[in-house]
Length: 339
Image: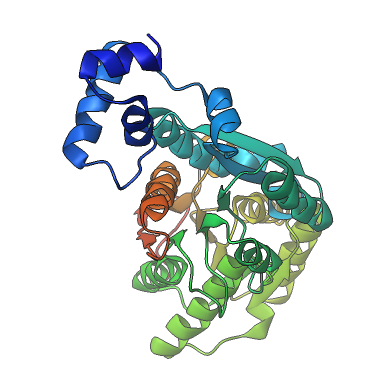
């Protein structure tokens, strides 16, 4: 089935068929649904390459996957591929392609975005790993690209984003530990240049204050994710110097694995002598020994929502939409009641 035959069957013009499948607002919803129904029935799929030749624009979403920093290890890419899977489900249903480029540094990442925009003429982009002050946001605004970010910046948030409720997650974790009588709570974070890490630290300080627990700087550490051995050493020294610590919150799965290693080295039984809680993912869910209690959130849903928002913005480019995913605690026995 080609577009001419489909237009003939529906008694519509080729332009109307094309614009209905392209999501243009000048086609009524009734006509759009009728066209989609027939396109599905007759297995018609628009040829993206023909569309590029005809319009000079690609019906493609661009995505740059960094393989450095928080995403340096293949083991830590599980959440990102869940996010991409959610994106792909929505893109497939809309016959939109996904173009992924990889970047090994911040410089490569900026070049990759410029390649998507200037060379490949891609006008729809999804960002992730948002920093507190993110140059990529400024770049995409400069070129007037339609984009959705997985995450927020510290100050400039006049753009569409999807994100985990980082502040709410930390509040749930600390309240959960306090209910189990923990007052000497350590926090292992990653570089606060990533906005989610900054949000989590600020929430940690706020929740401690709310519960009248003094912040002890010796109970807090920020480490680079690409330095797992250093994380292990920092946690080991922290536990040796601060014997009162009864629970460790880990901001990432990698730091949770380092915490497990440090506790094992010091012969501290997890779930009995000390507690560990982290953010969920395949490492602590399927690979860690023992399994670690974690807050879980719907990563795939975030990916789907990002594409929904991106498509909506194509119809109304001035509309700013945000989505905040809530978390729930998955208990796996690594948190004990403190005596």
